[in-house]
Image 1 (cartoon, rainbow, N blue to C red):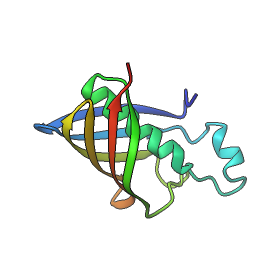
Image 2 (cartoon, one colour; image 1 turned 120 degrees about the horizontal axis):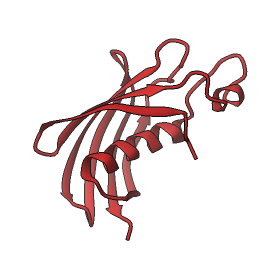
Image 3 (cartoon, rainbow, N blue to C red; image 1 turned 30 degrees about the vertical axis):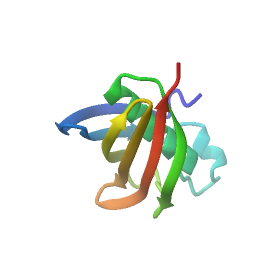
Length: 122
């Protein structure tokens, strides 16, 4: 669905259950022509999908969001300013009920903070 929009360039385990990822955004992706014409912004739902993909890659499991205790979009991701997202997240629990605490940044600027629960899809 989001093929070509982003690429997970680096995913590093910092310590047990704590990860950092760098994600490259394609500023030429067609999604930006409609969101918004002349003022491209990465849709929030895409930011959530990118985070989910990073977590799935880290756990090597197919996961879905099943609860969001907190999700704050603090800033917009403008692909004309920066094409890299930094994603830091911590995982607690099991794949049956995995609590995620994450921060998504564009450079030094935080654009999203989230606390959610994910579960494995069978």
